[in-house]
Each structure stands twice: as structure tokens, then as C-alpha cells.
Image 1 (tube, rainbow, N blue to C red):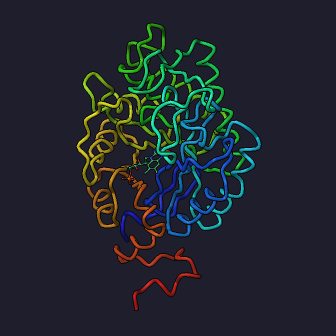
Image 2 (cartoon, rainbow, N blue to C red; image 1 turned 135 degrees about the vertical axis):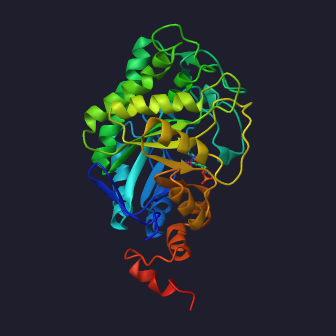
Amino acid sequence: MSLLFTPTTIRAVTLRNRLWVAPMCQYSAVDGMPQEWHHTHLAQFASGGAGLVMAEATAVSPEGRISPQDTGIWSDAQRDAWVPIVAAIRSRGAVAGIQLAHAGRKASTWSPLLGKDGTVPVADGGWQAVAPSAVAYEGYAVPQALDAAGIDAVVDDFAAAAQRALDAGFEVLEIHAAHGYLLHQFLSPLSNRRDDEYGGSLENRARLLLRVVDAVRRVAADAPLFVRFSGTDWAEGGWTIEETATVARWAADRGADFFDISSGGLVAHQKIAVGPGYQVALAAHVRREADVPVNAVGLIDDGLQAESILAAGDADAIMSGREWLRDPHFGLRASVDLDESLDYWPAQYVRARRRR
Ligand SMILES: Cc1cc2nc3c(=O)[nH]c(=O)nc-3n(C[C@H](O)[C@H](O)[C@H](O)COP(=O)(O)O)c2cc1C
């Protein structure tokens, strides 16, 4: 059997394979509520053979949304709107996960679907963004630095969101500490200029993330808990892969189970050499140095490529994003590429299993 289609168990949750759907914002929510679009969008990946379907970056507070059209889970009404979506994913045999997020200084920005860039003014439905320091992302409005009470509120918001996510039926929780959003902003010296216990040393920059891990773990005693990191800022003086491995180890010691290793997003002047599997080496570094399970993500677009990453020992699982958008049945297709006969190929689609 291929490694890609070998099930894996994290805590008490068994995932039927290691080919997973990466979180992808749809910018299609209304007042933070997921819509019919989200239902069909996420359920189709479960029909298409995914082991884990990770719902998009979902805001833990209104001001934590990237755009006004982001999904949220700060209210009971939002929790309830997720329930049928989670049920649709589960009924198709996949595990439903959700990425809990706060955008920090990259909040209140125009949805890319509107073809605009930059900060939404308050007069147009935007809001004042918050961050570790009053340092703007290039081209965006200057955020307000969080005070101690504001930081405590962020921790509480993540915990409350985690509880609602579990109540909605999500079985995997992912803390978004990547792509230049709030928790990453605290980690990186390029966005964190604080001189209190949340800034300066690595211990201090990691303090908020670790508080969030603790708080989520307290409410979600048994749920698999993932952390998504950017393994590097791809910028001089920024967050590094060595720091990522150190903090992943600390997070694992506090109860995080799995690490989703992406990169970039903190500064506009990042220099990324993009190519097939371009972030695999980052995942492999964290796996080796922190001795934690990781998934690789980033331009992993076919089953043979995914299998070779697992076979090399560079990752424990694979997340893909855009390939699932091109082909929502990517999992089924990858199983054919790897000569697997899945017992969860949808019965309704069995006639398509072989070309003739
Ligand atoms: C439409 C779209 C939306 C995305 N939204 C998120 C998100 O909500 N959270 C996140 O961590 N990454 C997000 N990403 C990044 C993906 O999760 C993934 O890391 C990235 O696309 C690289 O993988 P790929 O080459 O397989 O697409 C998004 C990517 C796309 C294409």
C-alpha cells in the first residue's frame, strides 16, 4: 500500500489517508456566516477522497477577519451555520478541521474577489486593525498596538472559538500562526517591536502563540491540535526555520499535535523562489529538528509527487490547495495514479473508476 493512502491516527481521530485539503479563504461569508457556497465547496473534497478537509481561516473575533467577507466562529449563530457543513464532510468519510485565525495588521482588507487591494476604510465597513506594534504591512493602514487586556482578549477569543468549533462537530483544530497574520506578527521581529514580555527574545515573541495553544488545549482536551507556521519570512531579519523548529517543539510540549509548515506572508518585500514542492524542505527541517509530525504544503499537485515526499521521510502527510480547486476529486485521481483501490470511492461514482 502507498504511504499516501495509509490511514493515520492523531489522538483518537483516524484519518483515512494522508492527502488533505489546505485551508482556503473563499471571501464569500455574510456577517461571518458560511453560506451554501462553503457547503458545496468543502463537501466536494470529501467526496473526492480527501482524508482531512480543513475549512478556511475562520476569524475568532470580528476584528480578526482578513476581509469583511471572511467566515467567523465568534458567535453561536456562526457555530450553528457550520453544523450542516461539518456533517456533509463527515458523511462522506473525511475528517472536518477548521483553521482558527486572527488577521492582526492584515485585517480589514478588501476581498480579492472585488479586485481591490489595501485597507477597507471604516466608512466602507472596515475597522481598526490591531497588531503587536503600530507597524503597518506595506500599503495597509497602521494598526493599533495591543495592550495587555487586548492580548488577553485574543487568547480568550481563540479558546471560545475552539469550543464552538468542537460544538459544531469539527474534529481537528488548527491555530493559524502563519502567512503574516496576528500570531505570526508576534513571532517575527519584523512586525513585533514590543519591549514587554511579548517582544524581544524568542521566548517573549512566542508567548502569545503558546498561551493560545494552552487555552485551546484546555477547552479541547482530546482534539487533534495543529499549528500552521510560516517556516520563514523570506526576508532579511525575519522569522527563521530554526526558530520555527524551536517554537514547534515548545508548542508540542504544551499539547499541540501536528505542524502544518507553509511560509511567507509577513512582508510585501519577501523573496520566494517558488517551484514544485518549494516548502517541503521547511517541513522536513521541522520534522527532523523538533521531532514532531508535519505536513508539507505548496505546489504538491499529483499523487506520485506526494508519495515521494512521504517516502523520503520529509513529511507525515500532504496538504494541497489549488489542485483540489482544479480537481475536487484529486484524492480519487491520486489513488488511481498510485494503483490503490479505495473502499471509500463513492459508490455512485464507481463506474468512473476505470477509464474503460
Ligand atoms: C484561494 C486560496 C485561499 C487561501 N486561504 C488560506 C487560508 O485561509 N489559510 C491559510 O493558511 N492559507 C490559505 N491559502 C494558502 C493554502 O492553504 C496553501 O498553503 C497554498 O495555496 C499552497 O498550496 P498549493 O500550492 O497546493 O495551492 C490559500 C490559498 C488559496 C489558493
